[in-house]
Amino acid sequence: MLNLSFRLLTGGLLLMCCLSACIPVPMPKPELYRPLTDFTPQDGVYDFESQQARFNVAIDDNPRDADARFARALLYMGVGRYASAEEDLTIAIQVAEKQSDYDPERLATIYVHRGLIRWSDEKVALAIDDYSRAIELAPKNWEGYFHRWLAYHFEGEEEKAEQDRQRGMKLEPDVFDREYVLRYDGIVL
Image (cartoon, rainbow, N blue to C red; front, top):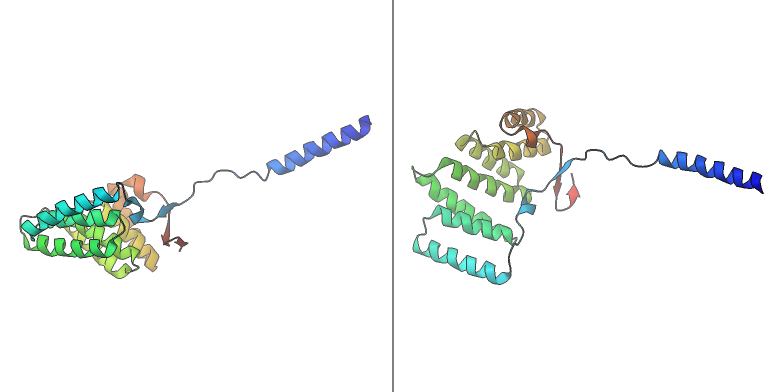
């Protein structure tokens, strides 16, 4: 009886040692690149409708108000109305480009947001154009480099991607030092 217990104990111990080698070790995993996930509905439908009405009044009062269009586009992005958001962003860009005193950093941000929508719609070349224009307007803003880096990487243009990553590393090293997984709607690319 004692001999059987000793065999079971050593067998169990040996099994535990073997299984301990199979325990997964946490490894740093790549970040998931899904830029539009930050735009999720924050408030109820009533709040969306009241905010939309407020922006509609501002735009009706001044159709050339790029900031009101940009704000409404952000609201649309938050509820997944990307076509409406892209339309407002395009108009905001057209209006802002005609105003010599419009803040170039703000305009760059509008371009980046339109690029995010175009990326989501798998219009990668158009997204790259938007990110490139954002970089022209605000070369010290890391976001244009970040999104263009990943778009170039997705397109297989590794040399251009690495150039953007190196430029971005100088501006925001913590962001550009990570590895990212590119995906569209749940499909890892």
